[in-house]
Image (cartoon, rainbow, N blue to C red; front, side):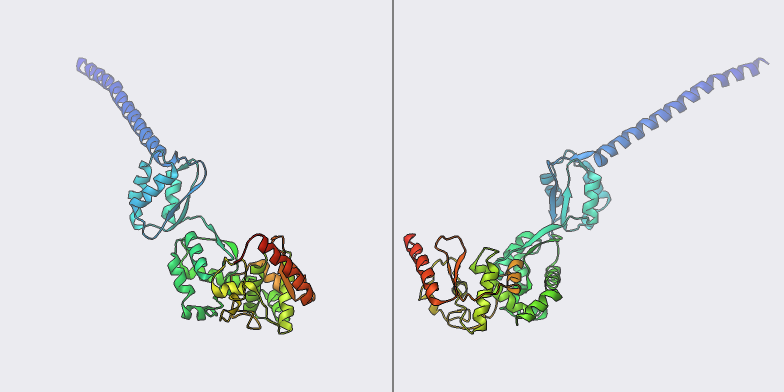
Length: 358
């Protein structure tokens, strides 16, 4: 009996020690989980990016993981970048780089930023197609806004085979473009760019506009050509349909358009402010003083307003116009030569007073 009593005593002594050890293990495990969980939360899910407003990281075809890290650090105002490095290694970012424009927002966490980059969830940009004078300028403008290089765009713009595939010639290629601001992805390819431009061209030239062009006896390319002259003549939107009507009156009577902007285009001197008789002698199909009808193609990419001004031109009997002597950018119109010369003398006098001789 004493032996049994002693055994029970030992068991009773061991039980509390076992419970204490188990409790210690559980507490330790809990603390360890809390530490690990807190660390993971801090580095992955706590706000680590603190720009004052939404900023964007641009990842192009030449970027590596190191260059991406540098771009994010420079742009995102990062507090702790460790979590991003963990994610990059675990998710093998070096094998999964997506080009594009990616947002970093105030108080973003690493998980959200990394997820956007690794999954290719990019933000669109506003691509502006301007009413520019030459295709070179268009290529440079687009190249500054997109990942594709301006030289790559220019190669397509001036490639005769590509032009033919798009339905244009070297002198009408500018007619493809409809100046507007479009939402696109920054890393769109050159083929995607031209397909989008073709889609927007077709959207603008709907059945109603095509019918109006037919009604005035013009193709869309001819409308584009006349609209380009109208827009070089005046920046005043209210005046554009009047100017378009004047040129259409001249076309209907087989009079030369005598449009000064076509002389500037022929000379490729867009800074000319005074056209002289010597300028009018330039041997070019764009010289509308010596050639009747429209020039071979547009002298700039006209805006939607310019195109619609031709399609909806104002009907009147004007066949002459001259820039106003107040240099407002608008014109004095006349239906006969005598009135026109009176307007012209006022303008020449103003030029002389300002000592503008070229």
